[in-house]
Image (cartoon, rainbow, N blue to C red):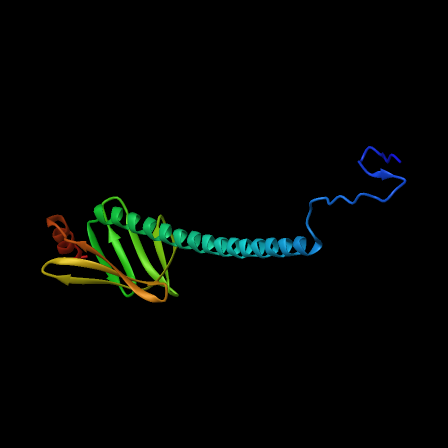
Length: 171
């Protein structure tokens, strides 16, 4: 008796020919999904940590940019400076073109220029002038990350400043 086969290769009318189809069992698929879930969760945790560090870095970079802009502006002002005077926690800078003052108001450093006080976005504790050997040193004490950071600027008055001081005594 001849066996007939259909287009799939199975016998027709007789005992079926079992062919194994290559594939995964449900257990193997479950294990693979569990491993993929673990990997994805680790990537998510790393991504969240990376974003947090990126935020902290941008905050620190902004603080440094604010500080560097202040320092650069102050150096430019000291370059054109004629004389310096301190009154309490206020530093007054005089030049032939302008008068600029810095003061500490509730631990916030403010700058006076063109008739108005403006905040510098820096917190400071003290401004003082120290003198030694005819050289003045302007000292700013800033709060930085929970401790005091000191910035010092050297200012040596020249002859015209001495003349300004002399005439200032007669006012």
